[in-house]
Length: 336
Image (cartoon, rainbow, N blue to C red; front, side, top):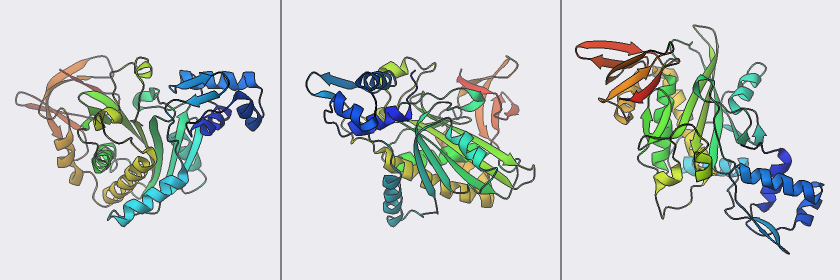
């Protein structure tokens, strides 16, 4: 997949109005040659965006994306808060391109307070999921962001945090009318067994606290078929979840909704930990009470029936009368 540059995003934002723009005008605006403009727009196409070229008219995006905008997110935060949702103090920042939103917040946490900071990006050149795997995203079609939070407690208390975060994200999706998304232990969001999103929680701090946590969230909003083919696992997107005829998903509003729900969840977790979330997580788990196979770090596998999770977020697997618990780590869950 191609890497979109800041100059490429400058062109795409000009084209986001859906109108035709001549190569000459685009080149003049960004101070490049027309040949360079053409090259940058070809990169955009390989990144999942569809362009139309008409001689005498120029270029236009055939499906103009709603690029993320910090001001639009702030407006949505205020709108949602006036309808009853608590509006915690969140500092919203949007960038076109970055290595990784989570890596950047972790870096900032070494020199400043990142509590309540939301950093979203259209394009991550080094986005990652669990176990260091790269996270594939589409400019204008994905939602990738991270939220920084301060906890007084340490790593042991925060063991179940990623599961609580999963509950928060699904709650937010349902509030936006996106029903049917389930959880897959430990940190995937799926729809009909196809992945639509993922969560990555990272922390810095002492074993007993305090801790700085960075919650990374990636959601597929609109994922073109050609991009899906390049992804190693079966995936879907929230547009499919919404169904035919549903309104186009407003990513700025969705970002505001998820960020608000996350902040409320992190605040609640700081007071009581994972136990208040356990029953809801199990209800939303796609494989609760079902046979599964766990792939272990040493290459071995374990089969059993999902009995649920314990108070720390560890998966409890039943094999007849026997019970075994597994911490997330490098373990992967598969349908048996």
